Image (cartoon, rainbow, N blue to C red; front, side, top):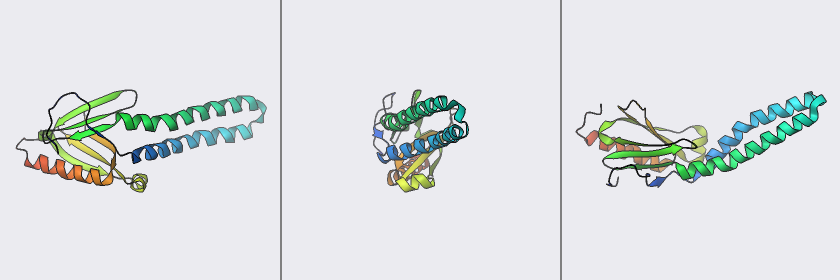
Length: 165
């Protein structure tokens, strides 16, 4: 962990570039169900074919925009940083949030990897503090980076004389 000044500045580190592919695949999978439902409905209800085709085209345009834009946007916005004093996160899409948690307030540090994240070599880190705002979450980290971060934060929280409340 590097020592830096605290403040409301953007955290220094981007998430893993592999997160773009992961987010793209998840977004695509999320659009498959509504697209399939529309195709099935269209094939069963031939009386309003033009309306069904228009709805299907609109859904495909929205899906394509979401699948192409969202992962790139998230990659540019989602950032993180850990110093000996604090953990910084920045996340969001339209509503962007920056959070800073002093290491002295860290209660637990967890790492999660679902099957798809494992396929992409990614992990998520959750830092739970005594804050009523809830835990800090860092999604889309390279697995090795997440492992080092968990180790560093655990070591830093254990070595800090604060009470983590």
